[in-house]
Length: 426
Image 1: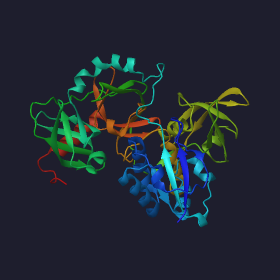
Image 2: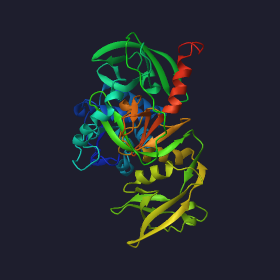
Image 3: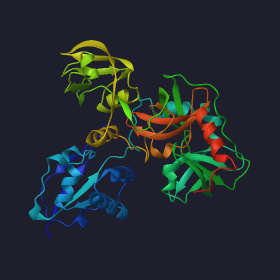
Image 4: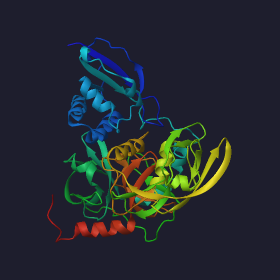
């Protein structure tokens, strides 16, 4: 059967969108354009699969199993993928397959998010992060790497001198058995118990005389800097504590009531309707939001996360441009439950420009910060500028949002998981 071949390339780091480079129905076999699948693309496929039609998900899984960047669809399967609200490749919307020409092979390519060049003026520049190494020195003694085969999949935090470690459960359960890297050595480990609600796993290794983490006693104030130490380099990322601990369990979420669209000045809003929080605040179609709750709004994801870290009923300041003139207002955010296509579209927007954790939400008690982590950075400690361990990172949630379980709750979780009368291992 003839083959339609379409080449897709993601060309920007800031947003996860596809740029169609070639839209010709070339009669070629998919094997002539295969390429080894890079880790970033594999991770993106893994995050898409749970939200796809089973037939379409199977196609992505087959590509992953073969380590190929090419995904083959029937025309009908392609339409299901193209029209799915979680599809982040915008240029696929322009493609209408020809049923007479057989299957479609899409070659996906994207720049490496992990290896992107960091501008010297960015907060995450290597020189600044290196200067923070002494701050994390004590916390670093309680960190291990969790490895599967030839790559690190999570960090772990030592909680007892006799070999107990906590980490992010969903990143290690699927990949078990895993190993810990302790003092440069790969050590076999086992999963002892799991707190499913908080996504925390208790691991056990045969090592002794380890350095357990020392949890901070005091709360951290929003606006404070937070640091994530790592294994492969001393400091992974620097961020800002954005929101106090709260539940992110599915349910009613804060809602502004706008349709956002990026512009060079900020995020333009439209479809403002009577009864929405945006309407009550005096916003109008065409206004460009540049700041919300003290956070600059540059991308659509910035606005999504600025709303997301609030609660229904919160009153926030919004700075915006109207016909180029700066203005400001206050909005009392409404609440609503997202479901169906709205929830799927929200999830897609929140994934833009990053690789989210396998489980990125529905935690009973977490605080939010904006350090740009990858999933393998979760499970390890997050510290303040004094080096106090204020919690463990539990999820990369979106482009500008990471979540961490505060130290006070982590102490309770560790006590619960290490109690002798807790249910036996999974």
